[in-house]
Length: 311
Image (cartoon, rainbow, N blue to C red; front, side, top):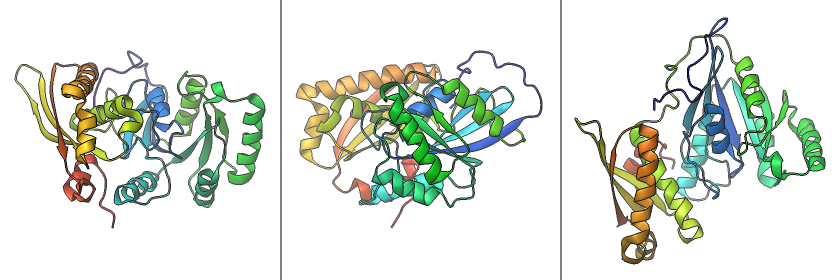
């Protein structure tokens, strides 16, 4: 995905180019996607109050002075039960492969629980340099933050611990500068006007999926997926997108449709408006809801959303 750089014109680079990969890991709902968006300076990953929103390895591209930072926003690491869960967790660990730095994001308000303990046990023996990012400091008592920092330093021995609020931006600029300084010398991997490695087709599906979560909340759990049937660029510069919302049961289809199709219309309206802004062009978006009880067993769908098939 390319777009005008969110900070306007990029300042002249000083010194040798730097480029490196930062794997952003953590438990579900730690704020990883919000943080990646804040570091990039614009939206590249979907955000929802629901945990486990991110399903694929999505790379956001942040620039600071002469450094290009490749941020891999991984799915939250959790106990995997279904095939989709296993594929998401595999994607999360796959996102850390060959990382120059692992950034463990922790919800400071929630603190260290069993999932975090298990994650720390896995990370502490890895060879990659590690930092810890305590997120949501704006809603966490200072005494708790200091206590958490001491525990994490003892348990993981990270290079450093940052305290930030991804939602308000507090501490994000300092974190970005610190990440840039840690990147190894080397040429940039992407053009300076590119903000993500996601295709526009993939972004469109993610935006629609985000609206499902934001508008339906607990009414529709994770038994849904977006299948792009058609993505066509017209000569007039606009794009035509046909998407199917896949659900497992007729009752879920009724929830997505809403009374007289009103809910589906609202989902499409908001998704279309956001895509117009993100893509910078007119968007013709057509949504359909299809009941497909076994969609989680469809290999082609996994490939379409960027996940590997996991037995």
